[in-house]
Image 1 (tube, one colour):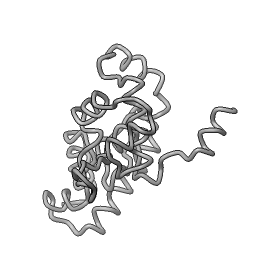
Image 2 (cartoon, helix red, strand yellow):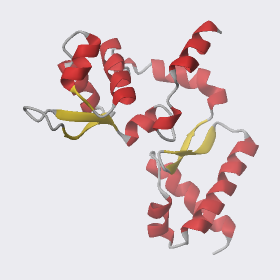
Image 3 (cartoon, one colour):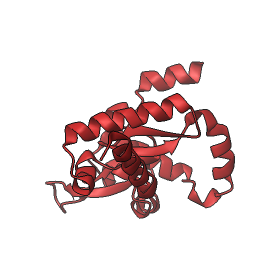
Image 4 (tube, helix red, strand yellow):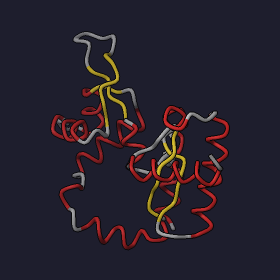
Length: 176
């Protein structure tokens, strides 16, 4: 199979998946060395970037994903605003931010930071698979520890948690 055909297979898999695909998953399907998969995926990413269309291939959450081009975010936002039920409430966003920056964290710590009960927000975030139980704390009652998921990374377009904005980034953005 030629490189062009391999790249077309990658493109089809990315389109079908709707979520990040790891090189090892691609390897299971097309049986190529991971080094070749990464080389060809870089080529595919470059092709999409060069064409400057509505879609891009990006590296996210230790895999590759087909995403909308940020240049067309205005139109995507207009489209998404028609689907209001998919929005998170302010309490859910606050809770998600605390979990993202402080993970692993227990419910009591979240509630101490927020100053209010967070049961509903945590339940919403679990239902939407933005957070998950990652273990239990070695403390009385052995409370659940919460952390973010790959879906969280995907939703916010992050490769990993190191790409979360810092407080300095947020202050600079607010000042601009």
